[in-house]
Amino acid sequence: MLHPDQSSAPIYEALEQFRKARVVPFDVPGHKRGRGNPELTRFLGEQCVGIDVNSMKPLDNLCHPISVIRQAEELAAEAFGASNAFLMVGGTTSAVQSMVLSACKSGDKLILPRNVHRSVINALVLNGAQPVYINPETDDRLGISLGMRLSQVEKAVEEHPDAKAILVNNPTYYGICSDLQGIIQLAHENDMLVLADEAHGTHFYFGEGLPVAAMRVGADMAAVSMHKSGGSLSQSSFLLTGPNVSPGYVRQVINLTQTTSGSYLLMSSLDISRRNLALRGKEVFRKVVEMAEYARSEINAIGGYYAYSRELISESVHDFDVTKLSVHTLDIGLAGIEVYDILRDEYDIQIEFGDLGNILAYISIGDRQRDLERLVAALAEICRTYQRDKTGLMNQEYIDPQVAVTPQQAFYAEKESLPIRETLGRVSSEFVMCYPPGIPILAPGERITRKVLDYIEYAAEKGCSMTGPEDPELRHLNVLKDLDYI
Image 1: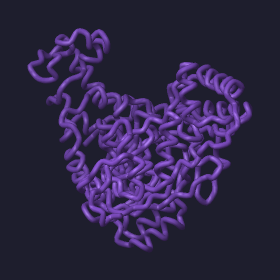
Image 2 (image 1 turned 90 degrees about the horizontal axis):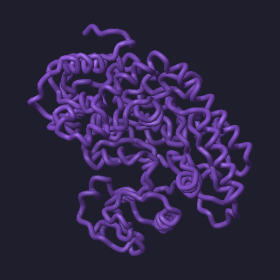
Image 3 (image 1 turned 180 degrees about the horizontal axis):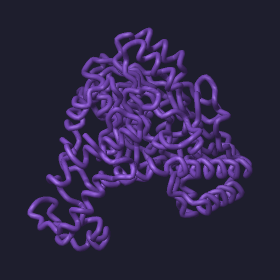
Image 4 (image 1 turned 120 degrees about the horizontal axis):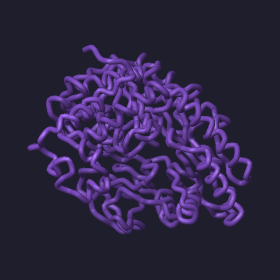
């Protein structure tokens, strides 16, 4: 199919033509271009609700695209260096799950690091694949998970030659990258696919001097959060595939769970944002890197904080994403989540997250120098005002899991609810995590240890937002009823 160059945005252009046509709507959505919901129209604006429309011939159909959506996907594939691209309106969660569901079926093995986003383990709950976890090393000072060492992946492949795929975080939330190119070569030599969770790596495709982008070094599939560092609307992402993956089958898998009423607000935002990055991405992300490096230098000059970067590179850290402003806070006597709360409550500064020992300020295409200066000044004042002895603070962000059964077996097994302190030694049937970053402390099928319970209690006490369990108060946990698993 012929399509225009990267300066085109087919979905956006079709919506502009549609707006001018003044079509009378006897279809859904029921607000009828906003007339039926004046409060919503006043809040979002006529321009926005006027293009919140349903699939129709001039606008194509997300489930089976043949015209403007298809053209937008071809342009995205070209921009990212992929064979095919799919517009995802269920966020990167949907893209990650479609990736895993496409690569594995029930009983298949998937090699992966344990510090994955919950969406990966959710996919295993859905399809019954078996995780083969690689426990990443942790940095003792920072308390964060590092990357997968190539030797660890080699060992997993040797022990599980029947595995179907290897999943890699590229990068982690903190900016840590594994040796993706080495893992791809190893996987392909052993007839395995490589799936890349690039929720935080959109900019790798368009910037310079950044870690490698998955599709450009031969990965088979990648889930890319365009809305994180790429500038599109929240919940909009791309799923990218290479030549070894059937695009028709992937489309079928996506259509198992993705809505049949795709939002044109989200799709047009992907289309416009892809065009922006294809035309201006190199310049845009050069400025992002400069801003992040400036802020890192200024924060380290305060004293007490440690904004880390490429000096972490080692066997377990192949590369580091310098756009990530990850800052260790424990040396000023405050947990990351405490600094996060102070910044929001007292300085009106909203950062991405705070965990037990670190904060992350997400620097991207919409940031301004003066806002970074405000962040640096606030951190300096917090250090002067709140600094205290760090004795007794916990810093370990990762606990090696004890896996008893697969996530699917545990999630659907008969279970019982117990007070959380009575669950020691039992097998969990649900998730517990701090969100963000959304990496499970405990996943279905894992044994509940003293370390896990202490971590959960400490994180909740410090103010982390604990999500996942059926009991929102986290006083009870669901565990497997069958005592044979104990």
